[in-house]
Length: 426
Image 1 (cartoon, rainbow, N blue to C red):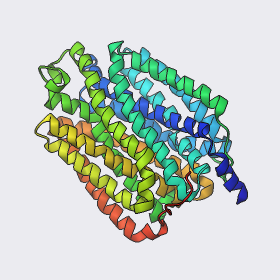
Image 2: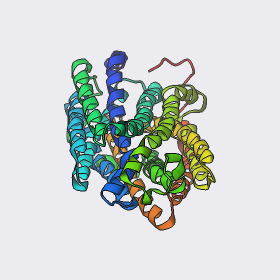
Image 3: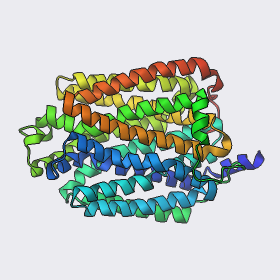
Image 4: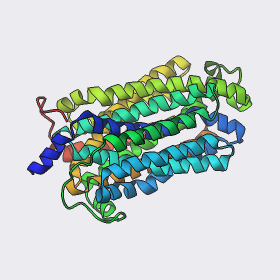
């Protein structure tokens, strides 16, 4: 008991948590950096919205398959080698992304980036290793802030660096990943973990236990629904804007009639709007969440998050002008910022202490499945039902998620008492 507590206290220095922050930030940076470039690929390779959705989904498909692998491997050999090794592989994937001159190479680069980026579950497990259960939401808020900032700067850099060349975003991401790997190799130390961690890399016992234990299973369903809806927005926002409001992006006509040069000029505009969403989300997850959790508790925030995000998506679908789109985009990150760290904290507290990496890996796998299903479905409904249909679909899913979260709170809310306001920080 004392050893476990000492290990958590030892994990408080800033540099190890800074590295964990960088790992998650780079993962989401890589996911978002491609978003402003999607219309470019659509024009260059004659790829429609469904193919664009598939390209976005390919990254997450690899995370879905390999997140449990990295989580369980980190339980077995340690967090540091998995985190550092993943960043080295990520650097290679983005170098290939920069060199891609065909759609198959582009898909290969995204698949590799998703494979190595699946180690976000290990970053979550590291946070769980060095925080107490009462302060875990604050630690997960650090990861949530990295998600928000990665989503912010990914599209922003992806758009702005196109002023240099279409390959510049890939080279930048590769260099950043390599620099972070060197930093982690020098500064990161392996945390002490609870004895009795699993020794097999693959296994289905966590899946079976989650399916049979409602306190775990419902959290996975809530996470899937939320991420699927948000990723539908991420993947289709650019093509939605170019289709409905091309003049905002400096185009005189919809994107399907624009040239590659015109689309490249529009890419920075897309990145700037998406950056604003990431900034608001990062502020909530990195700062406000530590004030909101003691007051309301994680389960209440997990109810508010999907409800607010759903309202934002409805606003997007009904927006008669770009001004309304901007207002809706300010609502979206509030819901994301409330929900993401709250669900991660609830799951970590419900999972067996010796298998944090495994269950957080399963959670990352579920999230990746949602990021795969969301863009795929959004691309399909966009082609068949129009530009606003992905947002309507996402809102319906989120309102169902809100209802499910209400039932979860009534049934299990008492199992997660609110943290006292005077509790020590993580």
